[in-house]
Length: 238
Image 1 (cartoon, rainbow, N blue to C red):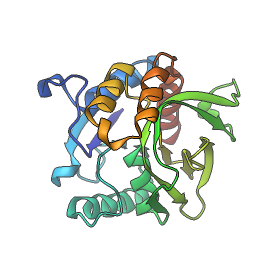
Image 2 (image 1 turned 45 degrees about the horizontal axis):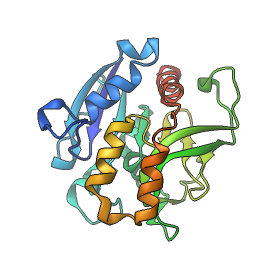
Image 3 (image 1 turned 60 degrees about the horizontal axis):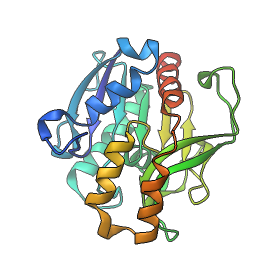
Image 4 (image 1 turned 30 degrees about the horizontal axis):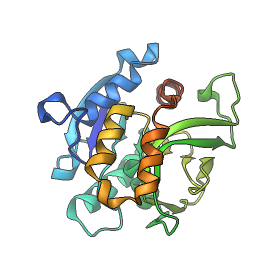
């Protein structure tokens, strides 16, 4: 399977840029599932206006996080939104993470805004309200995932279905048909990366929340499970 990763921000596991970006993080995440190790990822800097062709070379598109808001009138976000609509019309699988989740909703008719409730930050319990075949046989009430967001989806696209939520985010996961999957959490983030980003962006957060989020990273997030969800979703959709 060939996936195009639409990178919407430069990010790295370490402060050294050469250590890789979102594509490397996603490759490591998907490798947690045996079938994910055979998925080939190719990076495109969507935030620089670099998008792949809509053709048979790609079995799906994986859209990353970003510091930008989908409601900002930035040319690259408008271009990405138009690309998403074209890809969706062809039935090509689309998976969005954090900003990617939000831009999927935004491009396909939903609404995204900066939430009055503030930040979702650190390891957060995520309630699961609907079970899909790509989730496997075990039906869970919740999973702990890493979050780092203030924007969130406030209205889903028509015909979309919410299947995950947190205490402050009612649409933490949604599907649209068999080909669109959005997740607000960051299953590709490690505790080390999350901790570094929180410290680098410390002034953006209420101090007590930032401290609690750092402490929450001692708790294990169930990212291997989400890796299996994404892998099986893509296999079923293709």
